[in-house]
Length: 107
Image 1 (cartoon, rainbow, N blue to C red):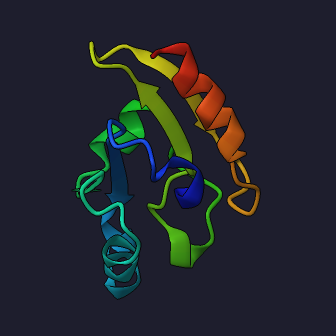
Image 2: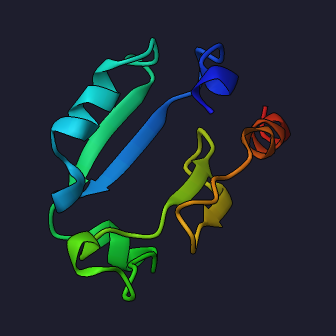
């Protein structure tokens, strides 16, 4: 997905992590690649956003407690939510071309 979107310098990504997801592995992900100026990471310490968007994974394994379903939300410059995709299975990723098509709708 990174290769598909990294050329769009106007694109900003806010990556929200549950408290227990912010670790050395996520820090390494933040530091690799050339999208550091486009990806902003935030930790949802109280799970407020996770609950508000209804993306909590109540059936998670004990090691994943508090980790939400992987969710992609596209918000335009005016703050209007234009697209949302909630993955029930984190093994199946959203097709990057779907994001490209959805982003093209709001340009």
